[in-house]
Image (spheres, rainbow, N blue to C red):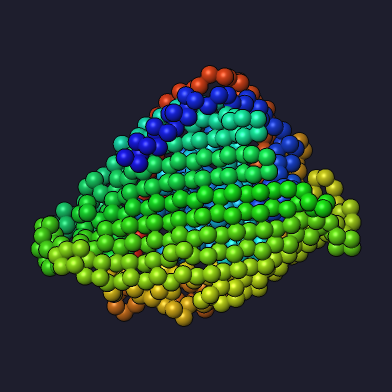
Length: 587
């Protein structure tokens, strides 16, 4: 019913929106110099050029997404220097600069949509990088990949990198469209998108989509290679279906965004010892948020106030064997688990010039849990309540940023943030960036920052009776000190060279460890040191190699059909099936 409602609403809007704008710049037609001047917002809370940003930044534009055919956020990030992806048959994962431990799920990567933190208040990380990501790829105007710690601005999880996804405005969306997508493994997807004006100052954008695929079949798991478990062959065991709905309303100084998404997936194996090749084990994720942002020039400065409601609801079913007959489909323990998180948040910052100090940005934010529930119960053969935990948190933060131009060639950026909450340790996060630009061709960046990641409510308190996880209420925040040197050099008019050397010192690193009882517990495992070097050359070496075509304006609704194939992702399974979910890699 929810899927049908999404499409009915979208189709109705497609027919009733009175008009739309063709004022949509084709980023593919920009020169390298113009591309280098694309503004990035997430590095310092305001638009600035890439060479002025206090971090090593990569921008993926809407034209890049279209040109290279990225169908998911994970595919787009996997093309970026220092990033790589995996797939454990339940979630896609993203690693950064060599870090993607089992069970991490990009927990040290901060992902935002238009500045809204996509981490939920139960698991406290962004789970969705595949078809389950709530925003369709053709709604994205650009993706800002900002390397290095960002805790001085955003708090927890800003350790290795920050990904800020900027969606298209109603003006940039183009004419109404109906898009269908057919691909491998039974993939079927349809999307309706429309944008236009409702009155003099009101502009709106709506998008609704449905997707369904049967998944790869069969999947082979060597550890189950025996007659009772179908010789390790999981048949029709990885299908998924769901919907996405997105809307954006712009009115004067207000910008209101809403996203609603739902995905249900059959798990071929799960976190605990579930029955192999049983289609009952499944997971259902719902990810919703509504955000209102107000911006205004006041007393010579820029004021921004943002408030939001955020919801993450995960409902799962796990079929466990009661005895040896479970391989034949008998003796099944039907267990249901729920992770239900709802929170309210507000942020306020003010940017202004101050004599002898440069440009200051001061702000505060707060988050308040409305619900933070972890529930587990057996439905059959005997109803049993196993776990019902509701640990609500309140967190607050104060931060300040100073951007000062020391001379025509030198610029200094300093930042500091203090975070505190009800049941987590307080944390102070500094950041410093010294930028040297001897000419328009050369840029040197000397960067230091301290990032942190708080243990989530799930890592602290989850206890399902010894089936898959154990609590650790004494877990401490992770701490990471980062030093990085970046050199950026323009090679003529068409090429650009970027080289980066970095080092990390991490303390109290949280890792999922299998206890003697065979369940996962998140523990602080001491210190880790890491160092690396990256180099990238990008641009358009020759006009004939890449000749973008300018977009042709149209005032007629478009209908597009795409046929393509998913990249085949195979999981390299370890000796234990329960470990594979956190340790899979794609090839």
